[in-house]
Length: 338
Image (cartoon, rainbow, N blue to C red; front, side):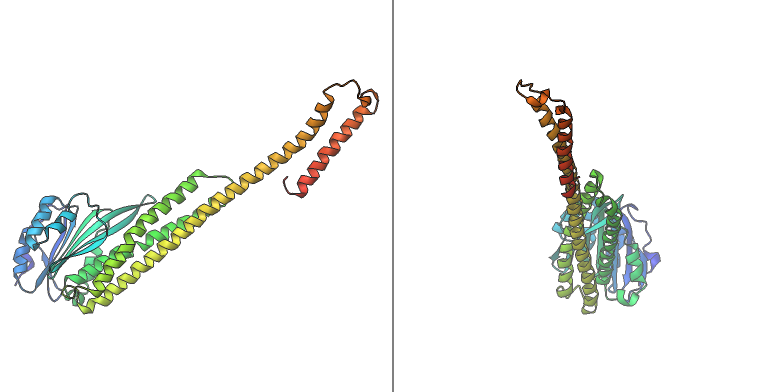
């Protein structure tokens, strides 16, 4: 029987190998093992291994491929900068999954990926980019050995549940920020920074939606298929993760509609404010045009203009100009242009 002391070699690279732990089939932790010792652990009939990696290099992935007999195409997808779509692939008696992860970073969403290898006796998670450590998911499993005794698939459930549950707070934070921006949205003046921030939020949520929507299909497959890797006792747990993913997707869609409405309202209010200014300018221009027209009339200095020779001609012109301007002003006031 294996003991923790049997495999206590330090990991090959502490930065890339976050965890490499062996468990018995009863859910009890055996202890940390080195990458090189994985094959020795798997020789024991009632054990399985859970490996957690962070941005591993090619040599480490090839070593894992040797230890677990992983498929070449799955290893190829897990290499490099990791720009894979969310998906699930079946390779014989193992599964390979790509799941998008997200974190808030300075008000913007930073995206990453987690590649997951699942077999009857192993679970390997490979994190790239923005992603939280799965140590809390591992601790949760170890606190429930009766469920971990169902195999590595329970660890897979914990990881997926951890990923999905960390997406909803991002949408919640965006909703709170939108509430804070409402004062700027309904302001009379145009604020370019507000519109730019609304657009950035909408773009981030669109990318997040593209990550969450296919995840629902991945989890749905885990609920319905792969009986050799997903025991019936765990299908209810994966259905719960699917429900959480659906709720996150619905929240994203609702938030995007709110952002669209906020952008439309902001632009409409700005346009309305500009129209009000133009109406006032047009009204004042009309009041200035009337006296300009009358005065320019008499600026032509025709000889046969009898009122020019009368003493009341000048006062009459002043009264006429005031009446015309006053009439225009009253009319514009009633029309609410001024």
